[in-house]
Length: 285
View 1 (cartoon, rainbow, N blue to C red):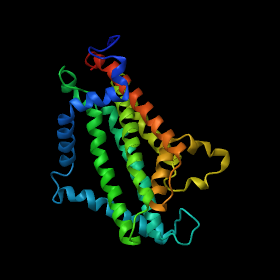
View 2 (view 1 turned 90 degrees about the vertical axis):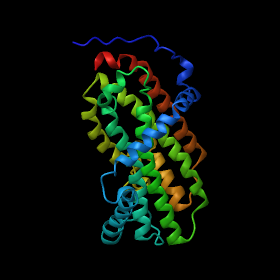
View 3 (view 1 turned 45 degrees about the vertical axis):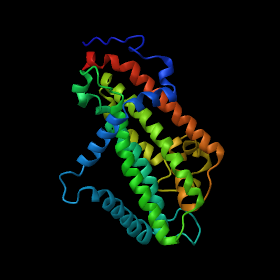
């Protein structure tokens, strides 16, 4: 049986380092390494294919076309009762919801294996392990940004304008980044000690997908179970991004504040757990 040794505080680590500006300061020091590793992984995903990075644009376009044909035209899906909503509007709303969810699901699904698959880095004392979840999240963020940009272009081509409320989308992308990074830090560290974490993530992601208003508007949820949506920060982000980008609806200050506070708390908690645990990674692995 492996003995796990926890230190009271990792060397050079103090409480102020887990505050948002302390986390930012630490990551900023390693910014060059983070950028180079993120770009390397992003390019490597399509390096052996003939079209290369063009797939980053083609795949989202194909998905929107499928949503438009199957769910918009054939099934007649609608997110609102308004007759002004077109099949393309529904397809874009569905695509935005899935893009936000897939960003989170992709990172959480791969987070448990992040440290375990990089044992060489664990044994290299000078390597900052905390940047591994960050590079993974930033890599997925590039895909999300490409998808949201394509949606914006399609809206411009269809309507000739973008709603002013679309300026709120970067705020929610930042909150997604904080929330997902915190969860990735926590899960990647926890999986080192509890290997069953990776087996639990997939069913949890399936449950989370149906707890989010991706295929349906939140207004359709019965009042007696509406709390399931109301307490889900990811559901709030999906609804607000979709409303501000597609419908021109400005999110409430309460909603934005809640999402920001929850995202910061998750980021700080995940980073703190990772930094307190990483001293024992080598003993376990």
